[in-house]
Length: 255
Image (cartoon, rainbow, N blue to C red):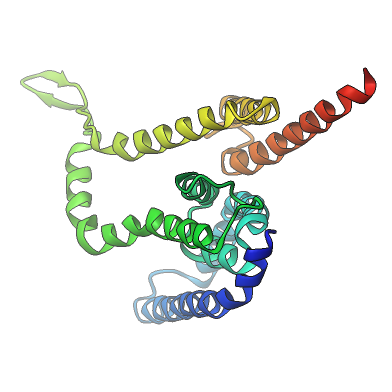
């Protein structure tokens, strides 16, 4: 962790605690209202509620592992408080490090490097915050209109028209978010690949692992590891990259 980040870390903890605490309060209120509603309507039995809790708990394990891996890497750059605030509440684990690196590159410094200053820390924090702000804006302004559009246009089931089957219609809307994510990851992958052989091997390993999991252990397979793919790809990519960098350092001594 850079010295300047360690210095600012203690100052960020009150803000992190306030944000995470407010979210815990929202969860408690939400659960209380749901249980109160169910008590009045008898919509679900106690067995069904317990089953839903178990399914939800298991379903979060995969994404949680990916988030933990990203958190470990983010702590080294932005400190524990910012990492806790981002990864525990509103941050998207797959974007956090990407946005940190973009913020640092905008100032011409290295994230977590010796030239990482207070200004760079602030810029990276703003990049992380503004990078996920559209989620909140969508909830406030566009979620209902988008829901109507998506419901009407995404994939209409085949319907009969004048005795003929009408093909399902597709719209660009569902692909919009995916296209943006693919473009962002492609840009950062190519940029990192040209930073050196270890970086290139890390990116290549992550791509290969992700493809392998989606191909043989994706949705619909007997063993589904799709929720774990990001964490597995990150871990193996870091292992390969670290091993490659150590090997490159040892080459002169071997020769």
